[in-house]
Length: 104
Image (cartoon, rainbow, N blue to C red; front, side, top):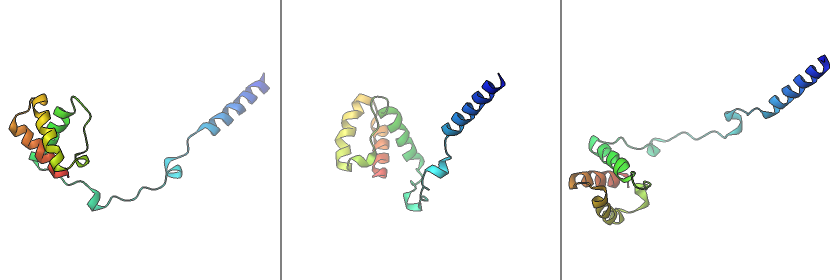
């Protein structure tokens, strides 16, 4: 009986030691430091409101697109078309448009 327990214990220890994860620092390469140019600029209260409207009004119906995906000229008809569907007034649309323009 003791030999069965010892064998079972040895097998369990072997399986546990083989199945443990290595530490993240040993398996992943070091990430480069973020430079000041790569950090996003702080948003003004008006731009933060535009971002909030964009995320909550537009993201309610579909996935949000990165503002850089389209040019400023391409965004204008998109925002105009979506204004009616999202039931946003002109002030709210101006805020969203300013936010998107600031991200280009």
